[in-house]
Image 1 (cartoon, rainbow, N blue to C red):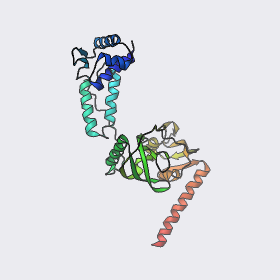
Image 2 (image 1 turned 30 degrees about the horizontal axis):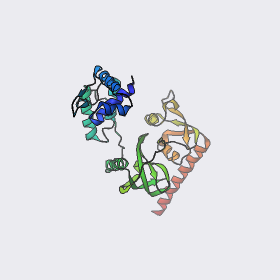
Image 3 (image 1 turned 90 degrees about the horizontal axis):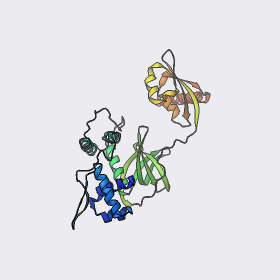
Image 4 (image 1 turned 120 degrees about the vertical axis):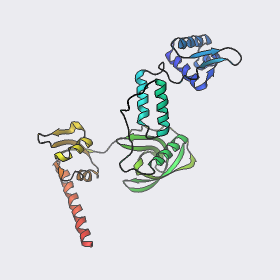
Length: 302
């Protein structure tokens, strides 16, 4: 007896409402006698499957049967409810209704111990509109246009959207860039003026959607005063942090070869001291000198 075929029978009936034993036998490439045995097996384990004879007869599932403990384990049901709780913010009305229905169906009213908020501190009025437009374009296979701020500055892009990704507190769009003739990943917070065009595209298999960090790195040691310890634990891997008896911290970390690193370190102000490497200290001092030069230049202009 094939367990895969038994589940296949259930899903086929869920999708088609009814079928004859001959149709099921052809679908699963077995005899009608085998299908009859499968129906009896499913019925014996509690699946509400039944047959009707006559001209309009066939094999049915009770209309109330959608998801039952026969199909999902206790752990799977809890995980499904947990996933719905996690995405309620994206589609609050639909996800909320679905959650209530499944809780009733599963006869579970879990404690409200989890809340996921995908929004940023700088909330944008059109944030949900952008997300809805991207979702619509992905599901209907329509080309989109948008303005994008990259490292090279503002650009206009024309893309075939494939997938929305969430990683490290940010949303991304995986899309095929028609100008670059290649797949690219765009940070949604840098997108604006998103427009769904009338142009339809035929989807192809998208590459692995993982957002890879391929930049070179170098080891560094950073000393932090106790007043920024909360940020240190927010923004660095805990295994890289060594606490001192005075309540300060030394962080040993690999930093990327990126221009934003020094300005980021500036955000810790006088509570940070760079221990190594010397070249990072030099870059930090150069940045301080450039900032001071800008300040004195502005004073002279006034």
